Length: 396
Image (cartoon, rainbow, N blue to C red; front, side, top):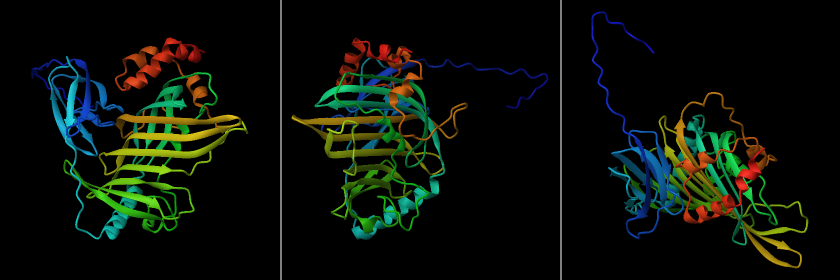
């Protein structure tokens, strides 16, 4: 920083009061149906503060008042809302985006747009983002929550994946159950749909130069999101003998950035250390959502992973299994945080073992507005907290 010393000059300093941060709660609704809008992005204008709504459309954040919020979700029109007080929950009603089909040759249009998106991925893959990431996982056996974990990572991300992370805070609790997922967060930290090192001439991923040769493509429609015109394309693999891989991708027509990708696959072969257990009807759904950032790339906003299966056991009825995780990335920056070692995902490292190396801070979880739960999630967490699960399990 440079300072100038001006002799004989008196500088008058105007001191403006800084508005106090206030805790604001609210809910995002679809203006047409009145239904909650899950995972909408909520940001404070002229600030780096922001959050996302939970599965019930609810959100919570701290902001100076009065202020303005920008609210967006890919299936709805972006809106800005003036907030003057935090005395009552704020209701935001987003108008659904109109879907239109363009007058183009659909096959050529979808194929070329995905090729352009692939080239944009390669061009901007070297641009990294560094952020905080809030991760929550809940495991259910026959609908009963048996395992809960929440973590905050220092995260390094690209336009296609989490490239490295370092644990900052964490807690883990579980009931005595038939099985547990020791390292489910590995799927969040390792899964990707694009690798810049892959040979573009032979790559068979859902986003590539040869996607149309391996997948049936269909234009779902075009929507307007502010100044953006977004195209949604569905895909399903053509090889009927292979495991199912299907989903959809949302691409900005002008910038060719991928803003959302949903993938559903049966290409899993989960095994248990109990040879009598067999997994059937496995299905995994993954959703990546990105936001444009300076420099032309796209930064991860959130990542969802959901695994479902049926477990067969001798002389027992099949047991429904579900493990789901949601990771929200916030406070992004273009440079790494000082002193943080961002490590790539490594198999064989259990989440509980990693969490035990951190310090459990109850106040962090109680007062952090990013840790916003649905009423059902809140009920699950309280059932664990009332039993002292977090404190007893994580105390060294």
